[in-house]
Amino acid sequence: MSGPLLLYGCLAAAAALIYVPFVLVALGRLQVGYDYAAPRATFDKLPPYAQRATWAHQNAFEGFALYTAAVLMVLVSGQTGELANTLAVAYLAFRAGHGLFYIANLPWLRSGMWALAMTCIAGLMAIALGMLG
Image 1 (cartoon, rainbow, N blue to C red):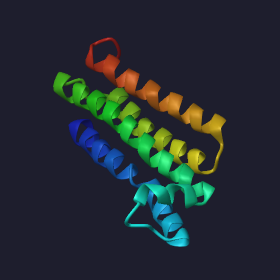
Image 2: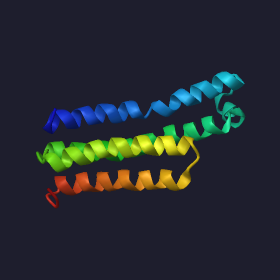
Image 3: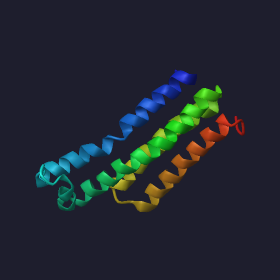
Image 4: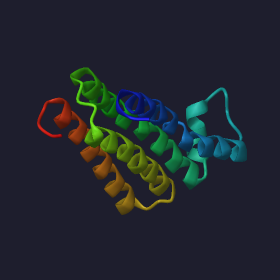
């Protein structure tokens, strides 16, 4: 798989990656009981790992918006070369690491993964604008 097809696949994978931390949120909710009348109040009762998984899940939405814009810029510009593919796939790896380190409560590693993922987004945008690749 290469070129546009790989990039479309990366978008689908990034969308799915948003919900991976939510599995741990659901597990935490099962442990403490879910209050359907006041679902947001349940957060304070969650175990720490599930609270961090909630934050990782929410942060993934923020990253996904920028990533989607960057990948679509590359697709529209037609700059779907090897560097764009590499950055698109690397972003997924860095975001997966971000979620893992967030849940594991390793903030320095989490922040490093975030910075590398953002660098991939910047690189994709630069490729689309004809500044790289």
